Length: 50
Image (spheres, rainbow, N blue to C red):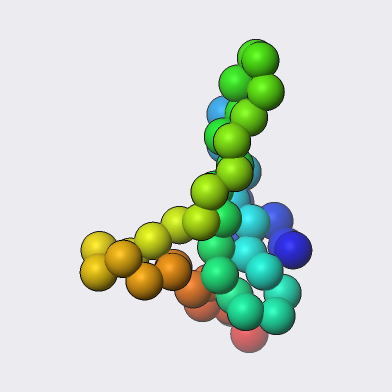
C-alpha cells in the first residue's frame, strides 16, 4: 500500500499491485477503511504519476 493523499481526518491509500484506492476515515474512537468506487460502482484505480 502507498499513501496517496492525507487530510486532517482521512487517508487515501492505493494498493501497489492493483492500484485500487481505499479511504481510511479517522475518528476519536477508531476508524473505518473502505474501497473507493467510481460512479458506475467499479473500484477507483490510482493513476500513478510516472
